[in-house]
Image 1: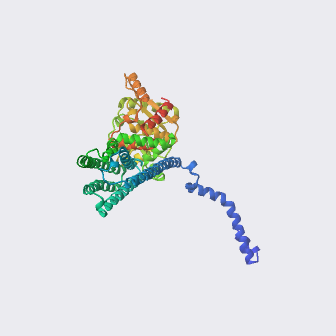
Image 2 (image 1 turned 135 degrees about the vertical axis):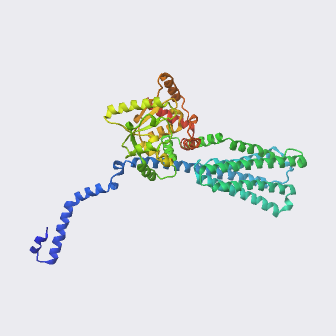
Image 3 (image 1 turned 120 degrees about the vertical axis):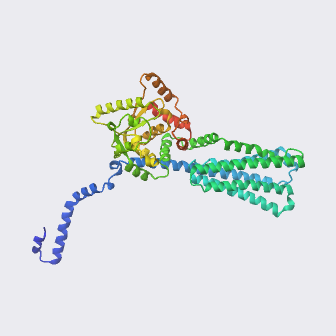
Length: 504
């Protein structure tokens, strides 16, 4: 629209400058409208906290993963410090052993000082192997490192002793050489088992092979010690040989290996020492639920998979049992995060008719308050049965994507571990306890009995007594709880605090 005025300018250079200045003024006038259009077409450049529904979920999960990573680093460095301290003490004691005679019948080897010396050496050797229990139960790298350094030290010790004996055979009697050979054979068990365990790709089989290897090795060592100490004591020294004093430490290690609950209690105490903040423990639980996926990946996947269903479209027969039904999944539809009215948390072991009655009661209350039918997330309708693992990994985001959590609490609700995890996850994902609605599930004619059962379950809650449909699910969840909270008791305390704050 400026070309009509060009003939008023005679100089070509001035004419070009005039056109540039005019276009610049026009662009400056249109800049606000251009900026507004770009903000509408490119929502990703907006502030995430105010515009993206999944941003807060992503940050919460990321914080949980950061807490879990920090806890693993603490355990790893504590393991290294303990291992180097133990080996430093062993080196110091080894200097004392080298300075005395190698004859087992020498006077010094049959004194109380030698017994105490050998007992301390064996205890430190056992303590070095106990460091295998220090890494987190799902820390593959930490377990590989501790197994590698133990294999390396054991190999160095065996190589040094074997090389020294065969280079200086005159200094060692024949029976001593055979004794070293048997020790080497026992060590081969440790080498082979640990190397096999290090190549496992999952945490559970790795720990299983590691503890099985230690179990086999410690009993082979006990057998060797009993045979050689008995032979030397009877045929050479005619008194108890000092090598027998290494048996108590080996038996303690064998007992420690054979009792998983003792290992768990010891590990739980260590975790509780490093992580005392309850909110950090709960955040670490989220990291365990989503696994190795990044927070952004989990939120993106959950956003695509999130669904809800109109409660009015469901019948009693639809929710009477937990048998998979593809037709029910077809009733649900894709939904946006924070658009679903409620996440329905319930136990399949509670009475179906009593639960349906409580569900309809809550539905009528919702219609009276909002003037419309509620849209809810129900596991049987909204989980894709062809890819259950993916939906379970997205569970924290699904919970955060619902406005409220409706708990249909019957006599068995607090005995189902997945129900408890849903309650904890909803609160940890940034939702307040006030957003939890408790609806009692009571059988007709047995209301007082069911109410008493629920009250007793609230008062005596213990996650250890909870169960899952699949035993491997319980093992996985309890492992997550132990890693995140340090102990079942700490987890129980956290859940009891949520239950006491909730209005039921």
